[in-house]
Image (cartoon, rainbow, N blue to C red; front, side):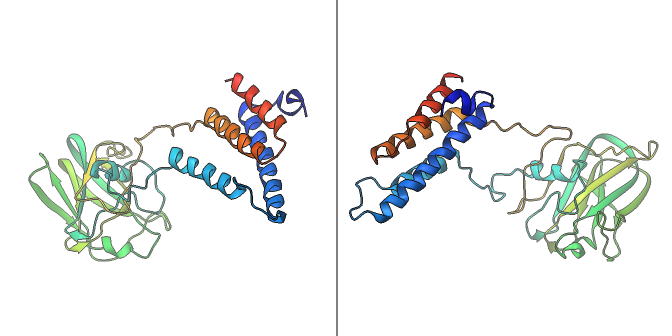
Length: 267
C-alpha cells in the first residue's frame, strides 16, 4: 500500500500509530509461525516484545512519589484551589494535633469561614472537633472556635460548615484537630467581613503540619494543565528497531519501514 494512500491525508501521530499497529499485526503472525515451528529461532517473538516493552519502561516510566517528595505547601494548596470534589484537598499524616493553615497576605477582618469536609470514605467524623485559630504573625495563635462534635459534609449535601467570625482580624488562619488523627478536608473558603461574597483564601499560600502517602502536588489556581506531547520521534525509532527484528525472522515489513522513514523525514 503506497504511503500517500495510507497516510497522506492523516496527521503525523495517526500515521505513526497506523504503522505501529501494522507491525503489531506482523508480530502476531510471527508468533503464530513460531508456535508451529519445530525449532525455535535464535531471536524469538517473546524476546522482541519483552525488549520493546522494557524500552518503554526505562524511557518513559514515572516513579510514584507516595507523598514522599511532596512538600507541605504543595499539598496544602489543594484546599484553596477552588475545586470542590468531595474528596480530600490535602492530607496530613496520622499525628498529634495535625493542622492546616493559609496566609491571607495581610491582616484582614474575617467575616466567615466555610469548610467543605471530605465525604468519600466514611472519615468525615475526624473533623468533628476541628478548631479554628488566628494569628497576626504566624507564630502566636489564639483559638476562636471549636466544632461541637457533629459531623458536617459539604459537596454531597450542599451543607458545608459555616463559621461566623464577625470581623475578627488575622493574617494567618489555622484549622487544627485536638487529638491524634489524620487531618483532611476538601476545600476551605474565607470571606472578608466587608466583601462577604469574595473568597480571600483562594489561591493564597498554604501549608500544613505534615504530608502523608495521600499527599499530592496541586496546580496553582487558574493554571492550565500541561499539554502532553506525543513522542513521535521516539515511536518512529522504536518502530524501526522492531521492524529490523521482525525482518530477521523473515517477516515482510517493507511497507512499514518505508512509511516510518517517510514519517521521520516530515518531523
